[in-house]
Length: 177
Length: 69
Ligand code: FES
Image 1: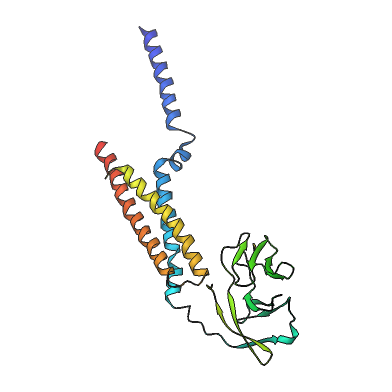
Image 2: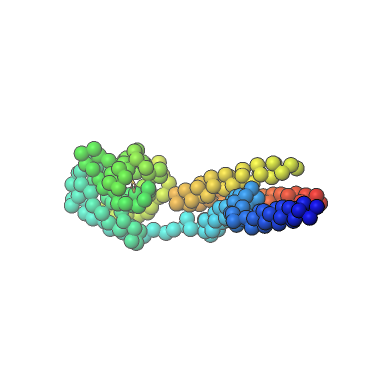
């Protein structure tokens, strides 16, 4: 009888210990952190953060950033820019731009920061295209639209005017063609 | 509404918000200022829907727990 009692006591002790092991789960922190509910809460947080992060764009757009006034700036003399040549200039203010006298004799100008990751684009007269060497992006020189490579948007168009052999930049259009 | 529905709504709004953020930044950088507020409005409403759904889900999830224990 006493032996039995002793065994029982030992058993209880062992099972207690096991219970302690269960309660003392070493992965308890992970279990708390990586579970179904925590997953849903993270998704909620992400969704709200993404939704709210669009608000500043909406507010700034509504504040009317589109009404920009452009000044008229002299770029160069037309006679200094033969066909098939290009030159860089700044317009408006400090934005890099490129003026191209194409091999066909057209005169076009764009902001030269590539619409992919802002590398400068160059005029390649052999193929009559604008090339961004960073990731081999190509733009149509006639309208500035991307034709190959990673860029998705067209280059901003600089409106130009030629008066008395002088080329002037008079405005800029972001979406065109 | 079943708990599954809450999950579906929350993940749908999450996907919608990813797309809206992408469209908003694209329109903003392309200076299409007329459509930026539309995209950002949709994203904002969807964020509110997420919060409301989450609160409902929380009620269902933890409310159940309390009543069953
Ligand atoms: S920066 Fe022009 S293609 Fe990537």
